[in-house]
Length: 227
Image 1 (cartoon, helix red, strand yellow):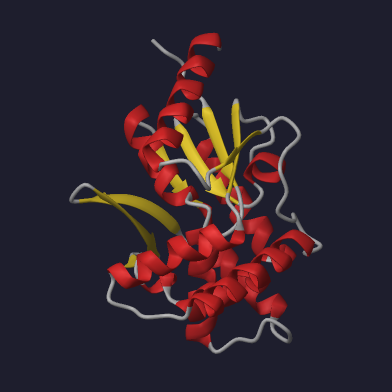
Image 2 (cartoon, rainbow, N blue to C red; image 1 turned 180 degrees about the vertical axis):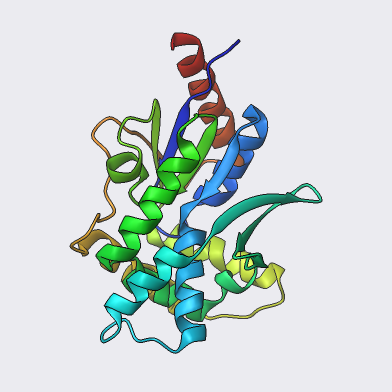
């Protein structure tokens, strides 16, 4: 029986980590774990509770520790449930997204979610993506990837996604949001965004998604074979 491995995919916002990770997991028959969605779910619950990241950090930490996270397959689509509520759509709003970075910088929030993420990946056969998977969450993962693209390319992709949903946004506004998010994520005191020393870096400005997925699937298969 082929041993299943842990796959860690890191990179900045808008680099295509989610779509690539989903495709790799599907091709390998692995479980896809979207850690960013988990932090967004905490941010969503923070908004619902009317808490403030500057004054209510301790309470937000306690809240994160009380939440139950589960990724489920619903009609062939993976959905995130928090305490039995499907939050897959609400965590993708701009308001929640902007709040998720400062929420994720609260040490107690990270402690609770990292513990949950490690538990999910214990048996292997997982593709986990986020900002600090290869450096903090799964430092012993057999496959580590840092997926990135230029800010302008990420803004262009985001604009196309939004237009596909019938949402109009200004390109410069999206670009400014991405640059601000990069700055916050890479300079935060707790588990900043950075490439693990042993990670394979993919700069995808001139790469098609299918090519990236094919490369990663081959890397994972070799890791399985090599043990």
